[in-house]
Image (cartoon, rainbow, N blue to C red; front, side, top):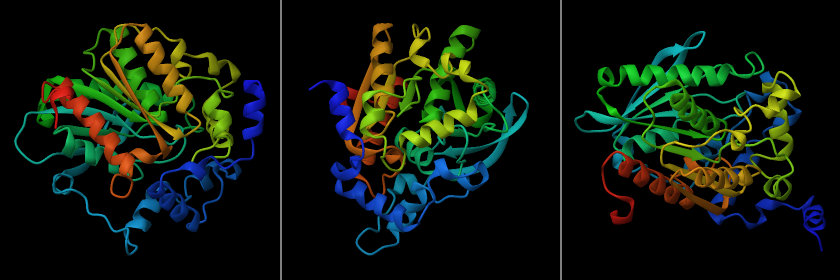
Length: 344
């Protein structure tokens, strides 16, 4: 049997059948919220749909599922602000861990296909990472499509990087210790920030953490076919996002989207996190391979029983707790803290 035959046989199967039990509980909670499929929504409707973060909050209120955040995470203080974008200002949220600085800094970009979601939907990840990496995390919003198509979000991300480099000391941070991080479309922005910093002669990130990144224009990859009907992200949703963000089909060849075709040399040490039940898994795998080929130090971990969006679900999903520990140890190592191989 050929690979094409195998993939054809997967069509119609439920890829979430082999999800971890706690992951299935989140998917069940999301289903109870009755979201309309994003690919069937107008953009305005899509932005109002229940999210996986809503499902986690719902689950935490149910008997037997209640989970408490670690004290270190509860101690993180956050404040909303605005920062310069490429065409005006954008919302941002600054997360500060307990203790005295100066702290390392991490610039974080949320997901949502460059179209939906905001700082509130993606509050959990930067809050947890601030505590675990003992760093100030700045979650930077950006202009979204289709109102602002490619490269608007990327230009805002570049502006956010320039701002954090210039403002590190006034934020209580160490200007010599700044990293970048993102989830999904935000991970795409994060690695493009590192590329932009290299090419523009700006201070480079010490480290980049790429959580299930959008990294190629290949929509017939193994993971796209395996997970064409997955939840909470499937193939039709990804096509909906892409069609909203591009100006024309030529944009699909842009290295901003097809990152695996970009020059990836001289980028900072990188961690890549992927999920088994995710159309974007192959993107992350290919990107890790291309980074290694370019001489970049890369660590990649795949969480086979997890779905897209799992990373911020640490209160209720073990794989998220494991992945956050993996990422934060790598960040602390990059900042000169506990080496990854010596961490408890």
